[in-house]
Figure 1 (cartoon, rainbow, N blue to C red):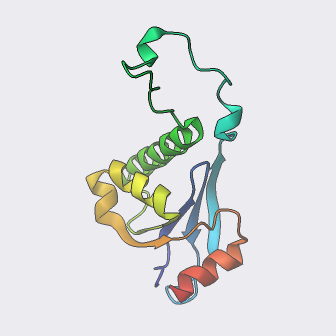
Figure 2: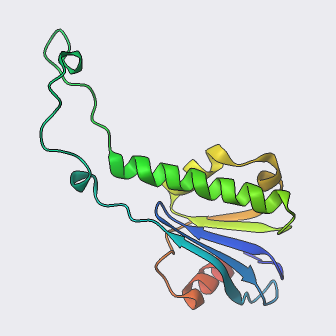
Length: 146
């Protein structure tokens, strides 16, 4: 994938986002970190209590329980929506002309749900991979090879 000079690259997952600017050319990116953000998101089992609530409304006529909420996934989806909002603000302030998104497939899908039309217009490529915890040179290589 070609990454034009001065393009923005967002590398994100459900709890971490890294904004890069390509200081290199389109053939060989040289990504420089512009912004990094990470949120704490414990495993789902650590975010809920062991016992179901005692409210009778949680029990159906046949004694079944309501579907359980995955709090960890809920937080990852919320974080993706926040990342999309940041992209919108940066796009509306003309902070970038070209944007490339690198994220795991689920996060990429969640981001797409929240893209503003100006963000959509500027996205020139997407890579469905989780590279948030990889060194910058591996991210550059993955983009080059895509």
